[in-house]
Length: 62
Image 1 (cartoon, rainbow, N blue to C red):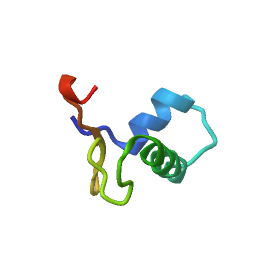
Image 2: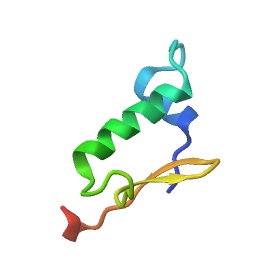
Image 3: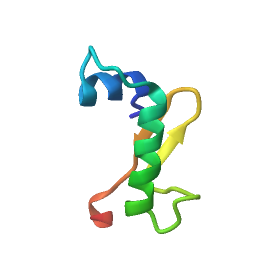
């Protein structure tokens, strides 16, 4: 399931937040650095261009 940047902003920072969708992008970069073997070629936290992000994980990956 793809989650838009706007939904992430509302769910994480709240409706009346002062941050922008760029803030979401920067946090995604940091998350990828922590969870991906190669952050430049993400497997778990993928970008759905023009739509948002999707988290891909199976029980075997945990």
